[in-house]
Structure formats: C-alpha cells, structure tokens
Length: 233
Image (cartoon, rainbow, N blue to C red; front, side):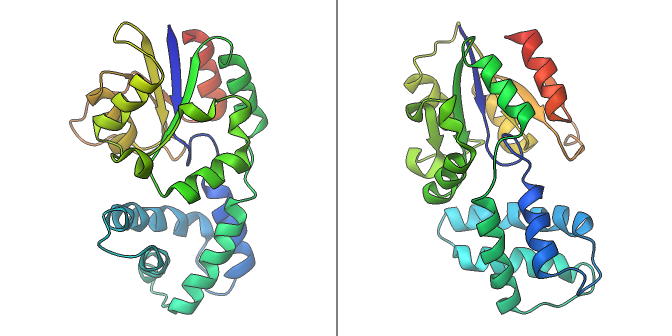
C-alpha cells in the first residue's frame, strides 16, 4: 500500500501569498522594505517563537508582535506593537481566504484513488483546521486522517506524531509512506526518524542543513511535486 501525507503551510498552499496580500494593504509602501525581503526574515523569527508558544512559555500575541517587529528591525525600521497586531489581523483574514491551486488540486485528484492520503501539521487546532477548511482539503483527505500536533500531544519532528498517524491510518512497516513538507528540520528529519520516505517541498530553495542526510526527493514547485508523485504512486 502507498500513503502520501502532507504538511499544510507552504506545502498544500503557498504561505507567502496571504502575507504579500496583507503587506500590500497594510504596510507598503510606507517603510520601503520589499515584502519579498521581509517575508523570509519574518518566517525565521516565527519559526523560533512558535515552539515557545506551543509550550506555553509565551503567548500567541507575543509571537505575532515579535516576528514582524524583529523582522523590520533587521532592516532598520521600528514599528509599534499596535501596527504589528493590526497587520496580524489582516494577515489572519487573508489566511482564511486561501485555496488550493489548480496544480495542487490535480495532485490530490491523481493521488486520492491510488494512495491513502493524510495531513500532519504542527500548530493550534483552531488555526490549522481553519486553514484546512478554507483549502477544502477534505474533498480529498478523510477528516479522520488529519492530525494536528496539539490534539495528538506531539509535534514534528517528534516521530511519535508520525507513528500515531501511521497507526490511525492502519499503515504497517511494509507500506510505502511518503511525507511531503517544506521544513527540513520538522518534515524531512521527522519523517526519516519515523522510518518514512520524504519529499521536500522546497519552494524557497533553502539550503539543506550541513551534514544532514538527503531527502529522497526534492520539489521546488508544485509542478515538480506533481511529476515526482506521478512517478512514485
């Protein structure tokens, strides 16, 4: 049996799109920092702060403020907490307007009759399930095969969340399981730790961590992902 299990953010959809839309409405051209340059820096700070919120060390409000304020600070710009929260409100609204691209729809339509499909995503259930609902992913993926870290009690790259999904989906060690995700540290390394194969959805063309093992496959676009999955499943 084949199974293809997906991450959500920057995998099933392009995470940058709602950021760029919100930025264009709220900030540009006020501070002269291109959204294309600010976005990866904000993701760096978000990735550092989000685990602290999940563990209860800081609030999500603090995450929302720090990640955009710290990103602007790298470009010599100071913004207020009120501006950060105002931007977050608009950004969150845009995230509830996301949809699957035509290519991603075709990928899921192709895979659905040929493999068991699932989702594993880190994050707050209300936020992540809201995104999944906006994407209408349940047209292709059964609700019972959608796993959110806070509901499971383990988050990627902890192999326990992968093994939990494997057990709930009725998959065995003899089945071929591909995990598709954008984060090397969470998705590729986590999948390997669970004994799965990985497809690195590397839209941002990030460098692999030094000395880390290669993913089985790498896709830098949805078209490349479609090509890889049609050859595998």
